[in-house]
Length: 188
Image (cartoon, rainbow, N blue to C red; front, side, top):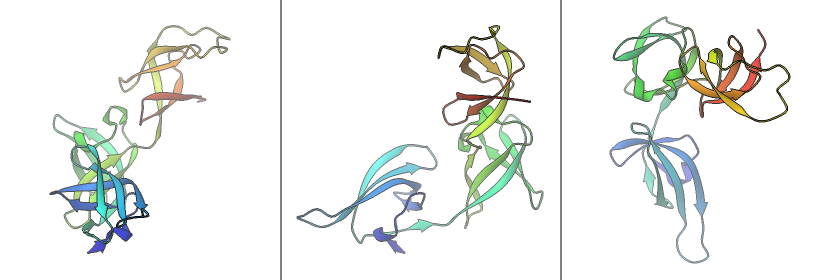
């Protein structure tokens, strides 16, 4: 058992009959009264974020989490399948634990977090930026780079994003998987 003094960002704990990850925390020592720890907790099953305050010195139940690299292979009606790069073992992963499943492409390397005691997948994180080919957009105009105007475009995985006016069909772009925003054009 650990105490509130062991709290740090990214720590996963067993709390209120579920697994919660600490997103941020703040130790508060007011002038009057007892110290406490104010936290933001994210439920690993539902993704819900809540504020919670622990009294200083309270015992918490941390859970051991392991992060491993896996390569995305394919998906079917129920699951997405990933392969361990060392043992070549294939595992199914449910869609709701993947942070941006619409950007998955064959061969993409992802970080899977496992509950170490149960060998259960808790989350699957894609790289922050992925490269995508533009399969449809309105025609680009050469030299139209002076404004910050954006137009809709569809990527090779079917995701619709907004890109600058100079991007054309067949161009490769870097996309942020967290917010589906265009980052930059990639030279191929």
